[in-house]
Length: 220
Image (cartoon, rainbow, N blue to C red; front, side):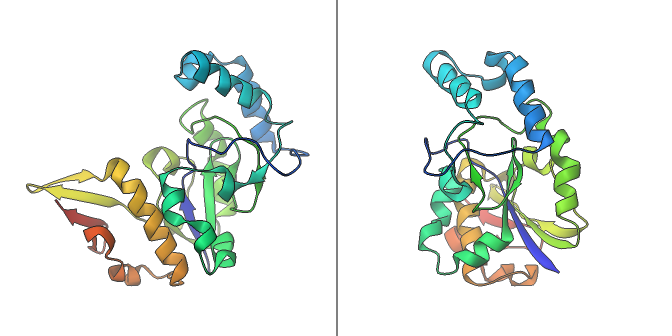
């Protein structure tokens, strides 16, 4: 059974591009672009002044903008920690990893995409994508490191959710922003070591996290 490793996109994205604009988009993407045009900009983006105008301009030009491979477009903490261009086996990464995008659905690392701005909890994006995404995940084993909002955009029969949790004074809490970095490191470790069996997760011990059989836990 093929393994799929699901990771989130990043809100931060590289500007510009070096490849041609998209020739076509899926019906779901087209519907979302139409919904973006009709939406209240302030409610959609939660931004003001220059940042708001930039977000509007980016989305207005999605179909005309130059593209980049998705792994180069996304620039957030998870992607910094993955450090894709230093991986020895990028082909394995490209084969296994799928990014759950609010605008483009399941995106492979080498898929060419333009800059865009859409959170997956806006315009019912997760609900719009869940059936199409889930169809692509049939007959696969999923290692799911998605945040809660992105989990709503996928369903799968076989797989495991991976959470990173902090324990302080006996109380457990999500790792939060700190968790983004360790998730990226975990993804890199999976690829570098060709890990597909959750039983092997116990060998990942970076930054003081320990696999309990259900989640990664760190005492602080």
